[in-house]
Length: 87
Image (cartoon, rainbow, N blue to C red; front, side, top):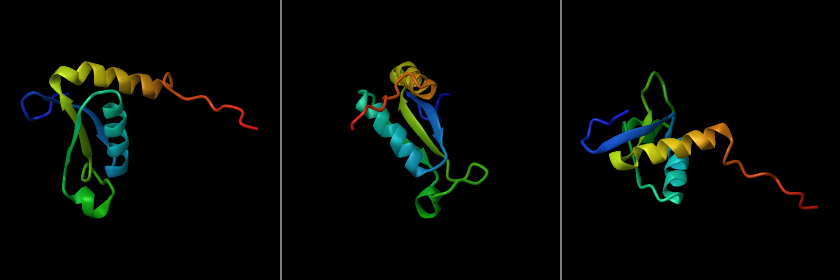
C-alpha cells in the first residue's frame, strides 16, 4: 500500500473527489493528517473511468496502521451511529 513518495502510505482509493473528501475528513477528525493525490482530471470531470479520476488518500507511513484500522472499523459498521427516537 505504500505510495510512491517516501514516508507516505495510500490507505484508500476513492472513486472521486466527494468520496475522497469524506475519507480525508473522517481520518482528520480522528487526529490523522491526510492528503489527497490523484489526476487533475478528477477536478474537471468528477467521475472515474478505468482508473482515471481515482483519488488516493495518503497518510504518513507512521499513521498507516491507525488509519487502516479506523477505515476497517467504519466499513464493518462498528462505528455506525444508531438512530435515536426523536418523536
